[in-house]
Length: 257
Ligand code: ADP
Image (cartoon, rainbow, N blue to C red):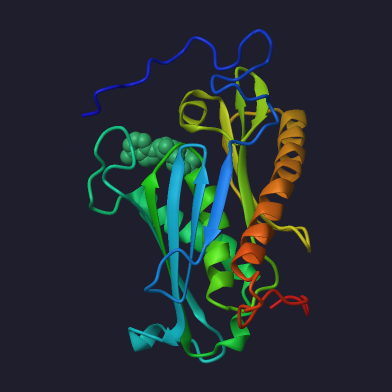
């Protein structure tokens, strides 16, 4: 049991349009990205996004285990999203929850279109993501980190996948919901995109919005993703500043699978 539990505030946005954590409606939380943070896997990345602290590790492409899941013409992508017991205010059971199983799949589906899967037949890529601290929007933060970890592992990518959640709180459309905004707000809309081709790889929706609000939310999300994508690119540049290059790299898209 946490020593401190937040009180649900009456308002999530004050009279001047400022949110509880002092952000404006279109402001991201501070983001820090690092790649190559783990010594024991082929690629890794760490993201801090507001109070989210998440690490992603990639193994592969490697021999498929169990063998029956192998695909003759393409790589199999396996993702595991897990929250540490201490990642939320009340100790989370270490047993995998339905939410973790679902988010593992959602994150996999968001990353898969970015990989040149046919380059690696009969192999497996394992992406393991550990949420060390959760503060709303973890699926998007996980996608950002996992995409960087794939690039760090030298896997050939069409583009990085970038992501953010948009939502509605106190009747207003806002960017990058934190935990309390996610839980107490009226809607939550996570988006992931490959910015170069503008292909959306994740779009979920929970809550209520009008048609106009939905359009406003998508526009706000796509705009909000731009600086995140830039930070991802900078994280790669920072790692490979010494001239070393990831093997596969981000390549020109030759069309759909
Ligand atoms: P996302 O993290 O992608 O927003 P959800 O909407 O399911 O996914 O979760 C919103 C937030 O709720 C999480 O980011 C986290 O801060 C919090 N949360 C998730 N699971 C738990 C839990 N078991 N106990 C307390 N808070 C949780």
